[in-house]
Each structure stands twice: as structure tokens, then as C-alpha cells.
Length: 113
Image (cartoon, rainbow, N blue to C red; front, side, top):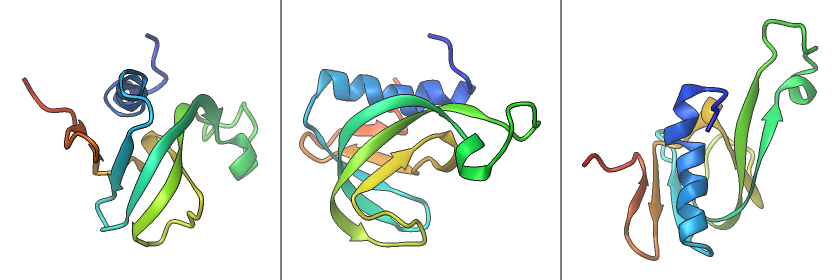
């Protein structure tokens, strides 16, 4: 697998692989500031920041990354992020912890062997 950012292997791609093995899972997504949601995995795709920040591809601030979209089922604790129905996750603002609420397994950070 060719990752745009090294951390994607253990973040977004790990979540995508876990959901492939456990479709329909409900996840508790928790950010370090206390914001938390119960979500279901919807889709994953390659994205970039040119549209949201009006950055040209030649600009050094241009960035490409892999992103997952999660459907928010329940808001556990609202925070500063403006989410209502969908939670889009990528390496730029990755949660502190993601747990499979159906099985009790910690998906991120990945357990160490």
C-alpha cells in the first residue's frame, strides 16, 4: 500500500481494513478534547485540501490524503467541530481513540502485540 502520509497506515487505513472485516460496526469515536460520537463507517476516498482552502496544486500548502466518512448515529459529547450527520476523518484531525462498541475492541490506537 502506498500511503500519502506515513501515519495513515495506522489511522485511516487501519480503520478501513477493520471495517472491511466487521461491516456494520458501531464505533465510539473520541477526540482528545472530549468530543465523542457513535458512528458507522460509510465510505473512504482520496481527498485534498485545495477546495476547502482554495489552494492551487503548485502551492506548498497543497496536501493530499486518504479520508473516511462516518455516519453519526449519536452525539455523546459535542465540541468545536461542526458535525451533525457526517464525521470526516483524516490524519489532520484524527481522534485519540476509536472503539468497536459492538465487540469492545480498540481499533485505534492499535493494540501492541
